[in-house]
Figure 1 (cartoon, rainbow, N blue to C red):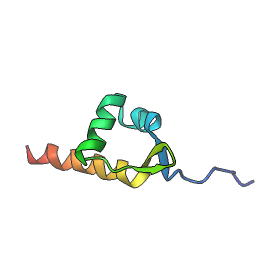
Figure 2: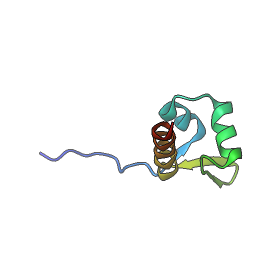
Figure 3: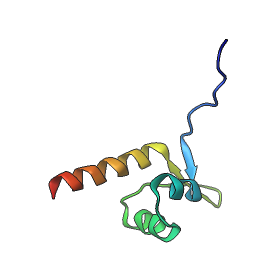
Length: 67
């Protein structure tokens, strides 16, 4: 029996990124403004690529190891 799974998500809305990163909306937007978290827009919707979330987590881990 095969399991039907939806394809892996590649873009997340801001509220979904808030949940994934355990951060508030204002912190997410500040990270976007500062360039620490990449985002794209589709019409009026701001989306955060899954790769940008992974890169941000990697950045946090590198900063933690450096200190």
